[in-house]
Image 1 (tube, rainbow, N blue to C red):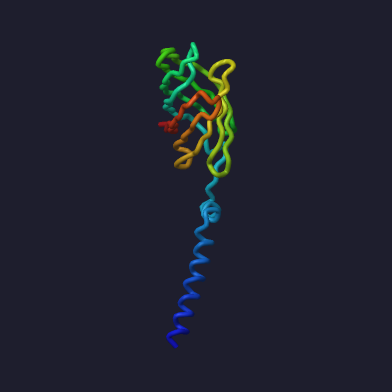
Image 2: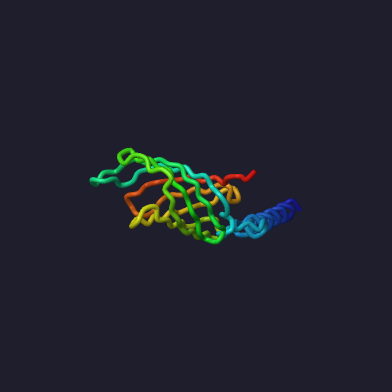
Length: 156
């Protein structure tokens, strides 16, 4: 009798574990909560802080810091105003530029921007906290190593 109770208990534990694993699967969680991202997740104004390194005149590499104001349209386009300072090139205030972005359902994506003529930056992004925050890293061109944290600006 003891052996049968143990077998039933073990079988029940396995069934619960298998069923629980299916219920707790990552794909199921996303579907149950209805959470996925798109370009519309990233809509509105964001304040951005950047830091890293980039090429400078004379074949040098300089440190760069900056703050930006970017407005995403929710359809894959944005405009921005940058205020950057390089350790060699100095400040570059109020530079305006445009770009595009793509967002995948898993809340990752790509940003493409042309901050200066002839320079195309490609950033990889991850959307955090239902779009309230975005984190990026520049992937190309290779000599540019810049990361950013973007926070949605709340309207009053």
